[in-house]
Amino acid sequence: MAILVTGGAGYIGSHTVVELLNQDHEVVIVDDFSNAHPTVLDRIKELSGKDFSFYELNLLDKEGLEKVFEENEIEAVIHFAGFKAVGESVEKPLKYYHNNITGTLVLLEVMKAFNVKKIVFSSSATVYGMDNKAPFTEDMPTSATNPYGQTKVFIEHILSDLVVSDEEWSVILLRYFNPIGAHESGRIGEDPNDVPNNLMPYITQVAVGKLEQLSIFGDDYETHDGTGVRDYIHVLDLAQGHLSALDYALKHSGVEAVNLGTGEGYSVLDVVHAFENANDVEIPYEIVDRRPGDIAVGYADATKAKELLGWEAVHSLEDMCRTSWNWQKNNPNGYEE
Ligand code: UFG
Image (cartoon, rainbow, N blue to C red; front, side, top):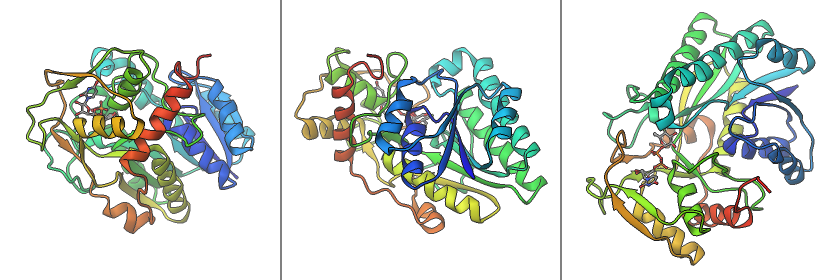
């Protein structure tokens, strides 16, 4: 029996696939390379020493997806595939709603038709919206301020409704906080298509000389140094979280939302300084205006993941900074030769 991983060539997907293969799971990856590079597949093989099936496919291609289910005995799905750039989602809402929501609907229809009813979904801490106060617990009301975030909120509802309609479904909604870091080997890591939107890839591109300096979005938040506070989590911890969630989903039915975070908050300046110290490089920065839609403080209450899944994050911020830099330094242009 195989685990289908949608978006398995992406940043979090690729790290999770390596762990799945390391734990002897059979893996089928579906990815359309819209935000991933084919080279990652070779690197996954190299790191795991194992093979897997791969289909270049967008989830909107229902016939293609049916073929995947016909040709493989799928036991459960880990669903990463989706567009994720907040700013772009504001400019192109239809693109985001169509790809993320319709893509998920097609996936669920095909799963249902093939009687596969176990799914681990990549949700986001973005569903905690602007009004909840950290630490965020899974029972807090959800909302979103941009189309990307709305797709996460809607898909959480869709999956929850599915469980109400048929109690055989087993759904885990994993709410990621801020994934950074890379595989220890430096062979796989985050490879943004364009100028990075997120903090860590921006920092590593400044460090490698591709970008001149970091712009820090606001230093007048109510935090210990005025810059925004987030819960940064090592992508390898996140990958392990998926394996724990998968184990749980295979043994239970129903729906559970679970935070994947460390429970600890660091400011932008904390991260900049941790990066400088861990790697002995300097990150020039300037303070600019706040970025619209940013919250001051967001971090997880990580209790539920530990109690329900037996999972907790083990990597330090220093690990995250060191491995992010190791990846960027060894692959200054990402997967592009
Ligand atoms: N930041 C900067 N400069 C940058 C980039 C980010 O100062 O160039 C700051 C942000 O203002 C924020 C912190 O760094 O305080 C983290 O920003 P990221 O963009 O890395 O992460 P976000 O917390 O904004 O975004 C993450 C995920 C999104 C998700 C969002 C909401 O990447 O997918 O959390 O929870 F929607």
